Image (cartoon, each protein chain N blue to C red):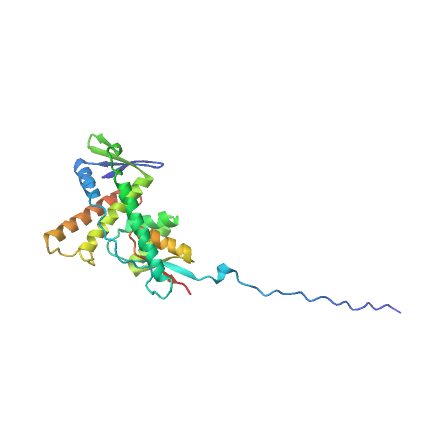
Amino acid sequence: MPQVAEPVTIPRPVIERETESADELAPTYYVICWNDPVNLMAYVTHVFMKLFGWEEQKARKHMLEVHKKGKSVLVREGAEKAEFYVHELQKYKLHATMEPAE
Amino acid sequence: MKLTLQSGESWQYQLNQPEADILLGLMKKFPFTELGPVQFSKTDADPKTAERKKLLAESLAQHREELKGLAVNLLGADKWQKSDSGRLLTLNTEGREILLQILNDIRIGCWHALGEPEPLEQPVASGQQFAHRQLMDLAGYFEMNLLEPEA
């Protein structure tokens, strides 16, 4: 008579509930540059390249967005870094604010 | 004014004598913008906005003081050489950046003094407005020429 193997109980995997890190929970902000008629287009492009380390093409794209649409979202960052960028942009006399990204 | 040589951190510009005189005169106008209320957010919904505005105002005031200190010797005699067609101005990258910020402060300050016209080209109504307009255009002229290789 053939032997019947004892049923083996496979332990259920324990699935730990995924938790969000503190960084993921922290609010983020959009850093926005607003249009004005006085800052030169070349100057705005230069500041974006200098501050964000962007290539000219990307900096120019954002500058044109500011110029044509009235504003451009430059980056989305946590509070501290967004604050830093607003400070630096305003030191260059660009009209920049940070807005909650929700 | 035009860029004649750029090598590594060094930027050399050729200016004729009137341009050099005007640029040195412009430097004496800095700072031209006034320290006033700052805007940090359009929505102001964040409870931390007031604190952030205060810090921003302090940061901008401190930056202005730093620029004032740096402006003193920015275009000192050691930065100039005589040339056949005027003068050569040599700046390092940091000096060029500081000069750009100083010129832009003057340009923006003039725009404020003119009542922030939009569009920019509005008829001027007084001698003082004419002077501000001229100063704004001159600052823009030098900014454009400093940035020419990037423009």
